[in-house]
Length: 237
Image (cartoon, rainbow, N blue to C red; front, side, top):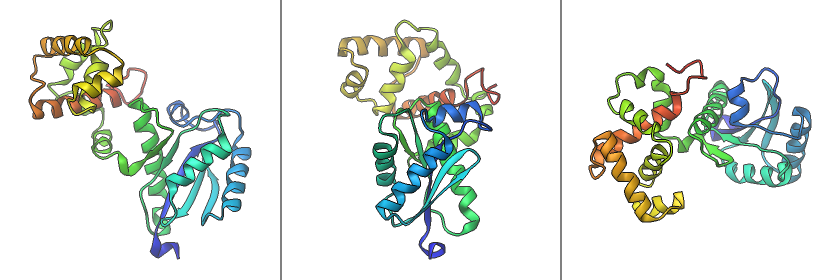
């Protein structure tokens, strides 16, 4: 049946042995052992009548469920009923897959969704591979893509202006599509403060924030820095 209808995988980090440090940070669970978490989720799946299989793989708890099930709703219910504030957990959800041969692909998508959003400092506890979009392509472009990007050195200059937090201000501005009102609200600052910071950004980076192509190029470079510009990571250059 699942061969034709497709399935979705959700992955939780449940055990710490054998898992790299970044993966621990990406989907950390405190207060429950691997086996305890597996039993709780398996019991909830049974009680809820989910068409799903709960298992453990490489120190992680994973769920395979039919595509017709609402995986995001299941994840929300698990957070509420199983975790319930006892520790921190992030859940990665794959795209719909078909065939047993693609179980590994689903697992990889869950893992990458957790890692990418962790590096970008996204705070949502549930992350879906389908929502990554161009961020997944940037992740696979690798750290080497920083080297020839002309916007990267300019953005690194912003990181030297730590007192005004210009880097984060630009990130919030670009994430808001250049909307100043939304940016000020997200950063909890006055519009005059935002305008001052944007003027400093223009001065330091020598860019035109009113140009859509420039904003797009800055967005790409900024996300590449978030993904790879960390000297503590082995893949950083």
